[in-house]
Image (cartoon, rainbow, N blue to C red; front, side):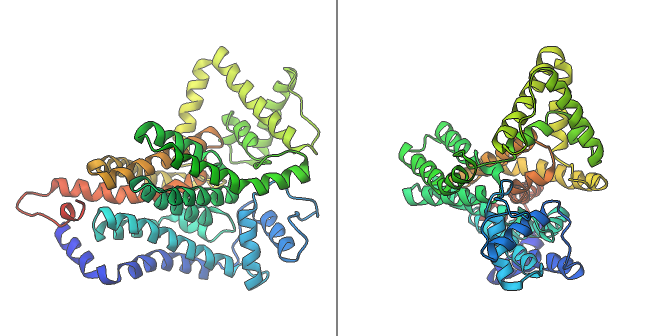
Length: 425
């Protein structure tokens, strides 16, 4: 059976990228055709309002006409570009999302073809193409498709940079991660974590890592300067980090899908912290609000560590596991996501281990592992919802395709060899 699948994949090789693109595009286009006006993501109205103001020349302001301090500019700028094409229609946005997902799949399949067989690329594209969470996000107005594409592009370039180091490749990686950070602030510490891990594990030359970090920081400076001029603080991320830490410090908040109960639990925690002298700042000072949220989160963790270590251990375990399956405002989908995530993680970890067999694939395994670990830890530190882990899901799916084929190959007898082993040398 495995040999027959390999022969089929080999016959598809001349037009393999076309088949991969179709496997990803058709399910998404079908969903878009069924619900072209769908825009259920909670931040969609705000992002569309900013995009409209950008497109109409009013600047980066929200629906009230004030300078926006919530969204990073990457995705609203993308929405503004789509607005020039289709006006108020969401169709151009959805089609652009489909194109971005196809690009993500093709980039990763290019890596898989370099270290594995066409069958591994086809398995990955099928898993990526029909993944229900990714199809769901593709038909929303939200930044995940753009974030996945930019993150994946940075992975591909970084794998090449690690394998054949040049200043240009590391600089390009820094630029791509900066664009991903402009899209969503969760990637803001990724270059520092990556550079540190590469230095410790592979002893990359310092000049390459400095080029990576310097280009990354330089690319973020214009937005940090805008925030200084507009809000009086030289900072890239205006809002979000402290708020996520605060919500993630109490399961009564993040584990509750009822927004009213979430707010009630948050208000209760605020009252406890106010009794300790941590008082809410004026709502107009967004930087102080983020600092206040961070102080509350740290105080809550400190309180549990000193007074209720058992509760802290249970909280961390709950967050670590909940981040594998929990969906935002859709608890009925949790079991389905868990059924998909668990085998993906198991096969993915086996695939990452198996890829350590030679220099090129070991470099890919190392970069994949750094990115997956980073986004998992960021997700677990804040509000543990699998949607925030999305940038790492394509990487895990690619590793899972390799792991599944490697496991099947290990079960094959010596009398029935496949092409998989040869193609992966």
